[in-house]
Amino acid sequence: MSLTFKAVTATALLMFTGAVCAETLLVERVRQEPVSQMPARGMSMSQVEARFGAPSAKLEPRGGQKQQWPTIHRWSYPAFTVYFEKSRVVDAVANQASPDETGPKPAIR
Image 1 (cartoon, rainbow, N blue to C red):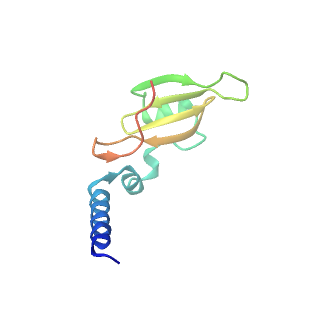
Image 2 (cartoon, rainbow, N blue to C red):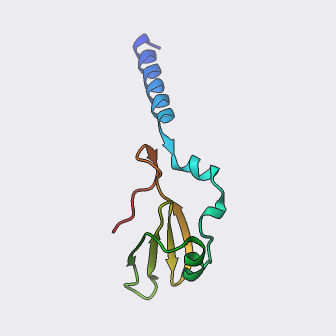
């Protein structure tokens, strides 16, 4: 192999390694936090509100244009966003803690 090829390959590997190490991933933080800090699948809206308090924002519902497309309601809390189908939790997703953290984009309003 030529010396130029080796130099380019080594430089690319070093750049990639540096970029990966510089970011804080949301996935890493979520793995460290207890699962009990977010609503569980199947909880009702009233159970979520009783346990976690009123959401900081109740976002506009999405979907429901056709019968086979359920309406999804979204409640935003400071640490997570909860997604409901009808009145039951289908998912809860952790929000970004800081701008340096790589994670999901903000909810569409």
